[in-house]
Amino acid sequence: MLLKVGDLARRTGLTVRTLHHYDEIGLLTPSGRSEAGYRLYSQADVQRLHGIQTMRQMGLALSDIGSLLAGDGMAPERIIGQQIRALEQQINQATELRARLTMLRDGLMAGAEPDMGNWLEALALMTTYGKYFSSAELKQIFTSWSLIEADWMIVKDLVRDAMDRQLPPDAPEVQALAYRWMALMLYWMGGDLDLLERWGHMFRTEPSTQGRNHAPPGDMIAYIETAIKLRMALLEKYLTPDDLRRLGHVPHTRWAALEADVQQLLARALPPHHPDAIAAAQHWNALFDQLTGQNPALRKKLITASANEPLLQVGSPLSAPVRAYLHAALACATPAAPPQPTLC
Image 1 (cartoon, rainbow, N blue to C red):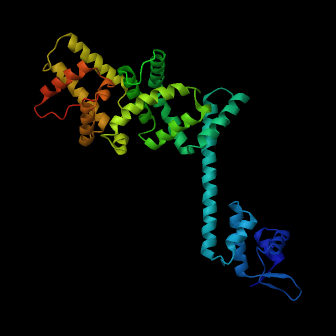
Image 2 (image 1 turned 60 degrees about the horizontal axis):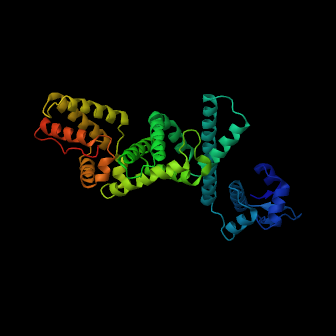
């Protein structure tokens, strides 16, 4: 069956002028002509036209399409495959756009009516974020922010105070803040080290993101990252990236509460075998299980790292006297006590 140019144009939704143009540039030459000179298109021509239109939808120029089709013959399965890929690309783009519009809508519903400055700032940030993250990743990041927001505001103020006092990165107080900062960031990113690294890289290289809303300014990022690198260099001697991903999150408030409780036991001069001391030690052990996900191998690695690296100990959320007291109490709890935590 052969189709005249008018019939082909009508059945495909293209114009006769378009088909003539394709013929003139050698992109789609009809297989034959009628006795009256009319162009006649075969099934193979229609298949080729399908391939041309598929690649046009993918954004390719006609000259590029011609090069791709040269000597190809365009097998039907390849035509369909190209069209599927084009549709998948369009679906992905539409899904991404929908997700970004949803985030923008949710942001508008949560706040006041934005002025032009708000719109411009939002557009700039969306462009910047889009260079590093998909909409799904951004949704995860923004949704999880509420999990750490309260503690984050406290930590950020404490880091600024340490900077103002010009404390060095290896100072015990700064190392404790580095521990809290690291724990919060990992918890926020769901233990995804790749996501955390991209987030940090964005803030280091994109000045427009620094200091906005609750974001730390550049000098604070540089300061705390120096302290964190000291800890990470030591931890990486004992823990793999997978180990770091497996670490759970224990809110700082729970460590602080345990510290206060044990300080009271020390003030009362209760011996480690006292029931209150043993209860505190068991609570400490439970917190450490939460931190390690009850993974014995990970627990052992953390214990070894802390025992061998004094800098990791000075950054612990528990003071040295409290840890020593809890060690003794845990040893009294049972003759077959598990390895005793030292990092926390």
